[in-house]
Length: 362
Length: 229
Image 1 (tube, rainbow over the protein chains, first blue to last red):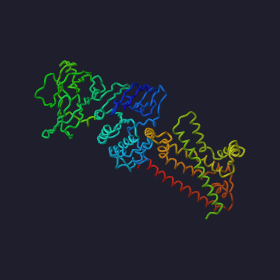
Image 2 (cartoon, rainbow over the protein chains, first blue to last red):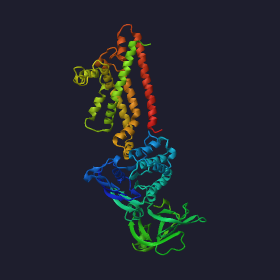
Image 3 (cartoon, one colour):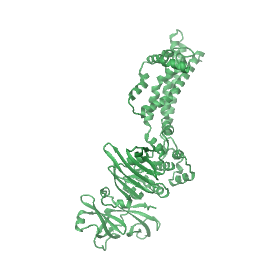
Image 4 (cartoon, rainbow over the protein chains, first blue to last red):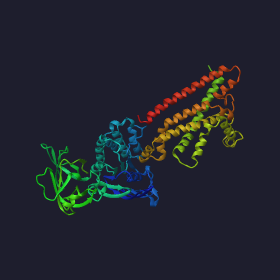
């Protein structure tokens, strides 16, 4: 139930080299523009012939250049959602949705109805693509790819061409697909907020090289990856559950492995899982237990690692009972407090600094 | 209104033009696809050959056809001996001449619409499981439909107006190869036949107008469809 990729592909002076495994669930391919993400997914889909590669889905080998095997795109059964919807303009929404299913030859009416329901595209069926909004088009494109009964779904920055409002509209649908369908999804993105919200597994690309891979929470808190440390929005993802709401102060208490966290009031029911994104710049470190501070959350832990972020700041990873937080501190503070791996510290997190990253991974 | 001879000339012209367009259509689509999508050495020569009838004097085209497809020509002899098809001095020859003259217009129009088709749509179709021939039939072909229609109408109009190549290749035989244009020419050469010439001229104008208006209407409809509205 997974995807395995090994690839070497050269284009001019650019070389993509390496490999990764994507388990069940959603795997994000993350990296800056020009890092080779699109080349990689095009090779997986069969739209590009790699010079050397071995690609297998669920044990079925699609490409093995050593054995001279390279299935054409139409025989791979890989759904592809492109940056732009690419709907067929001369077909209605219904005909667009039926296109892939017709070739798959596995008509399952019940699944159709469920998927159409899941994506809320029932009311659009009779329309032509030219009469849809950008968000509706992308939802239809996702439905069309899924109805072709794929064994793997590739999504190549499906939200990069839509505005923030449409993005907020589509993201919950992708979460639902991730949680309810039994197909691995490979999601290409250079937007960290999408990765944090969607991906259980993260593969990082930089200049054609595979620089990191693993569970999202682990990869994001690696202090040796300047790819993240350099970003102002670098931070840690923390899985938690809603413990209780405080309506008077409009706060919600979350429980995570590190202890309890207070955040601005959430709409989620008590007991429901959430993922929060704690940005490194919102975390302060103290050697003594702080008293009488305004920050609501004080977690204790030990320093796991310290990395160089930029000329003035360092990134410190703190292990708080199995949850790793990141703190951005100045090099000056690192030297003054003599911060080093293994040192016990207290991490202060302002309660207002919690962008909510959707539902937890199931 | 029209005399039997004039009706015959009109009917023959319509038949010659229709056969010319329909018979050359598959070849035109193939040629347009080749020119728009393939890169091969010698493409400029193929392109030039297809467009040659556009720039050559029609008499030259007709004469070349006569040399190739006449009863003594290499292709003409092969066709008559092996397949029993005679083109010289027959209406089928007039259709061939009309097809050759209209071909570049048809190819040009189809090629332009092919170049406007977004290849990314064809990629999407492939990822949905469509083999290349199906991609062409279900995505490419419908999207170039307006280009095909306008190419056909242009070629039809060109075929209706064909004169030089036709009269050189298959002569001007009433009832067999005398098209509207040849008939008008004949009448203008006969003293006192101005009325007939004028009547057929009016018919030619009417047919051309209908073709152009129909082409515009179909093109507009096709553009709406291709835009996904």
